Image 1 (cartoon, rainbow, N blue to C red):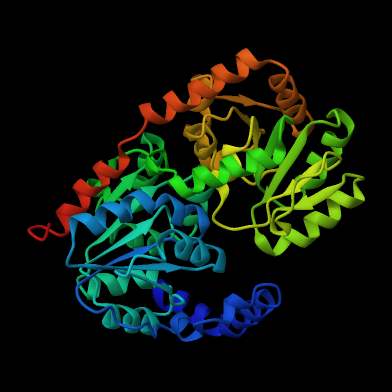
Image 2: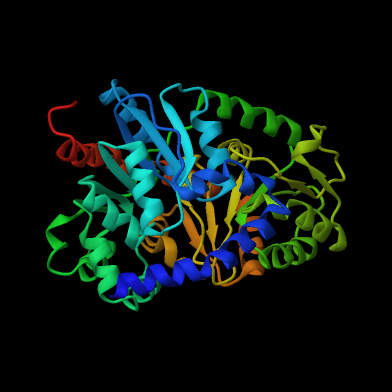
Length: 424
């Protein structure tokens, strides 16, 4: 009954869903590309297939080491990677576009007949869902089709757990439908067990965070070196994956506190906001250039806007210190592991519920500092720029921190082999 009501709500809400899709397409026309895929009309892969769902940018980047291992371990299989956002799909194309065995598509809307059409077309040997993108009808149809499902790199904040718990038995049934669940941390595992209930608790294990295993390609390392040359001898402070409302706070504090020689590289989380953020910087009295201009950074430029996709590792490679977006207002933070992996000291704000364990462990390891607000983050970053010894020590601590917590990819592959026995 609950699933029927859920499906009815989806069906009745489809005009609103499509209206929202059209609204988003005003800024990102890619939302309307391959529209049939959103209704389950996916080109069938040519041969046996492993399906992996990575909703957006972070999940797609995180999946990189796992996909690399899947390709080598299962040479007869193709990999279908599904997404929900154009930025996720663009990131996938950037990372995997040259690999002929990888196919990309949208995940269909969560109506039972659309999920059924998708699974009948794809016929995956197994399904892997990155992090916590769990849809009740999709999971039910995977059960009916006997597709073994793995929830990989799963994280579940206390806030998200409460949201799922409101769905009651519908959420419990969806999580229990996973054959295996690989949690990032013990706290995530405990919350996932509570959601899955007795039927699903035996499927939950802790494998760690796969984001510690992401490797920086030589091409991005070279690009980062070229970015650093553009900055010359100037100290570089980077603010990455910033969210709406945070840029104004950072720009105000930077304009007030930072000496003219310090360069702020700012990379917004969502590409549709690039123009708005550029205008905001200029209104804040900060001279700005854009990465997309492909021009040398002038000595008087205060802000270099990272308005490109797939180059985050290169931006980190040019930085001396970093401020992590999503943490300065109550968004729960974005990924700080990338900064640590680049040996760049981290400033993180008060909100980090999406990366609680990683943030706490990075601070404990001496790789990150917790700051009360954006102004405090800018002040702490400036203090580190003036203290080379401490800055280098924090950078080395970040590298050691990532090395210590690596290995999740190998542990995940052990679970995949349980889903696909005798095929590797």
